[in-house]
Image (cartoon, rainbow, N blue to C red):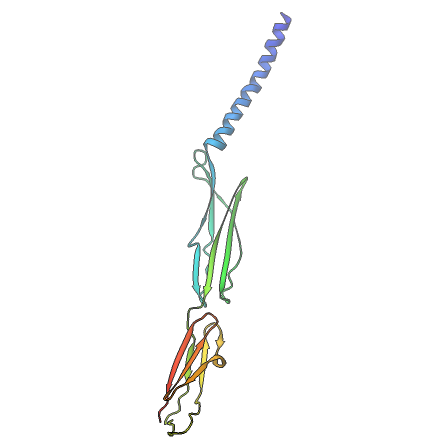
Length: 187
């Protein structure tokens, strides 16, 4: 009888622990496997941005939300850490990275920003009024100037081609944009 009572007492003491373990296991399975928690990181704006040199880059940022399919369906806002920068003064490709983390969930995304120069340089020809060339004489250069929005002064890089009755002035900037001007020579 004494032995039977000790076994019953042991079972009564172990039963709440066993029930607590079963309930805890059910909560864990439901919370982490049935519920499906997620961390959603969203980049505001486009993932690739192309800007002409001289335009201003405005960082649209990113946002992150941690939520579950059954528990916390509205979710909570999670802080986003941004790294990288865009140098608007230099043509090139830049990467801005975003990272969000909540407990064991982590997500990263990035944006590519390209600063491009598609504007051709300009060539200005100096023209003196009444400037004619006497037949059989050589033309004397009146002057010219070339500038680019990105490279600045390109006057010393202008290539001149002298033809019978005209001069062709050509220049190319560091981005491959070309400009051309033609001076008619009047004999």
